[in-house]
Image (cartoon, rainbow, N blue to C red; front, side, top):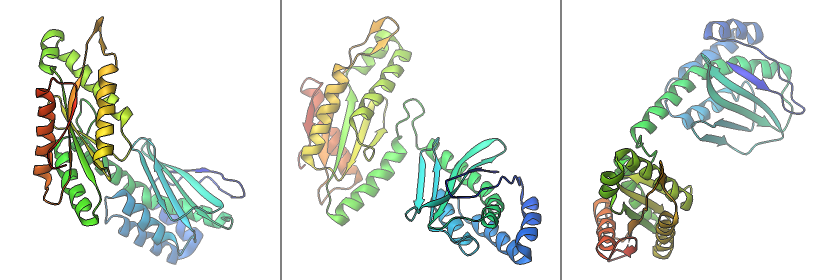
Length: 310
């Protein structure tokens, strides 16, 4: 169900059509049988994808003949989605979308001239065709995200790591751009579990992920691939940048306070850095970063080592 946000110089009216039958009746009244047929075609086309970005692009293309516009912006804050098709213009028509009490985000169309009353009314009816395909796409995206996410720490899991490394190596080698991988292991983690308990160990894992996230960019990808073992995949990052980041992460983890109950738990990590070369594949890049991390362990822990061949 669309709920309008009125923008300056735009006219919006509130129409609440909760299902396609009501939408059909309204479109016949507003636009005649031709408008209804076009709307039913839009419904059919929107059911061909579960990808949110494709869905918004298709919707924009399909309604353009009925409601000319220059851009579409879709945002869903909870799922961290922001999709923009073309550059925004001065005048906008914006709606909060929902179905069965569930928020589906906000959709905005823009153009250089004001939307008239007939167009905003028609847009409200057409949004009914988007609501349920969009809900299905969001559910699908949420399920995919959950399947690739570690439930304890919120980091990406090993399955996500395997896919990402293959993809990023292919891109780096094709475009001749740098790529680095950091392997990180929390020092003496078994000892933390034995002395303070597994619940305390879980809190350390969560806190360490928080410290890593403070140091990394939005484009850096963090994965938990084992109990206390993590990797950070750094696209377009060469050796010097990767070593600087690894040292920043090491220092941040070591100098942070970790309190569980009344106990302060000293925590550090050992890190290994590997940079992709022409012969690397996903397995060899990971192995080189992992071996460098174990060199850091053997060198006394709480340090960073660079892999051979990087």
